[in-house]
Length: 350
Ligand code: TXA
Ligand code: MG
Image (cartoon, rainbow, N blue to C red):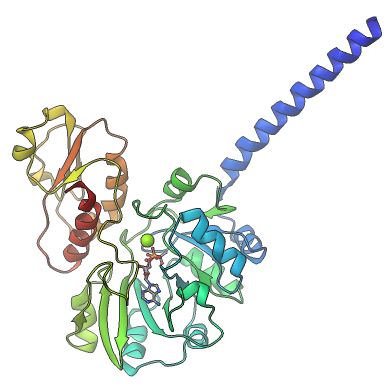
């Protein structure tokens, strides 16, 4: 009898130790999920797992573009519809050339001027680029990002990384490793921590009609800079009706809080002042003198505002407010891309 009691006591103690250990392991696993270990990121990618990677624009959720199971898990983790194609990331022009079947002269000019950098070009794909990456299209989106950690990672790989922004489909894109973990938890095998993204808004996307460049998505690279190199370009920014850019949905980049393009004065007619949040370009346009007013750049610098935009949209969701308001910036340079993201972020609220 006494022996039996002792056996149970020992068994229970061992069980307690095991459960303690597994909790510890889970905790360690989530903490170790974020780090700066390029070798570990490389190992997981070679094993067909998904890894969060930093770029100068936003964080991507990356997988081996030639591994259909890995690519399928990118779509699954993001809850992304299969009709929305992925961008391929590589570290050199030679690798870009291996993924496309035609390189228009103006595309070569843009590549020389802006890669590595926040420009994606949609070009006719090489026959071995899989259709699950391009969502059945004959074109492929390619880009050489400029973040040093990711460039080093890409240089070690003999396959391109298919990487959409590392957010659940429709939600605000992540501009820090912590944002990726906040939204996707430990679904990526690893998140390579490259600090907060310098540009803060996704790459500008240029497609081609014949040899002529066409703007598909406003982004971190101002259109004026592109036009200085290749002359005036056509805009084809229409939303879900545009078959050239299936991902350009009207509602996107949206925080959970109701976001409205109205003035604070207008909002005060319906909501109490402590229930209103504000996204303000600069200190001088801040109307709410409390923690609910998020200033994008004290001095009104548009690049600093772009850098802070998505972190501020995410922060709105942690404030205890009923509504958040904003006013559009002047539609000039990078201001046009900021306005585009604000327009999409507020689309469902109207
Ligand atoms: O800055 C960026 O571009 C980030 C970083 C991670 O590189 N990536 C990014 O990926 O924003 P994603 O998937 O969130 O947006 C890519 C957009 C989608 O709207 C998609 O429809 C479009 O690029 N796209 C990709 N391939 C395309 C293609 N072949 N034709 C037309 N549009 C394409
Ligand atoms: Mg995205």
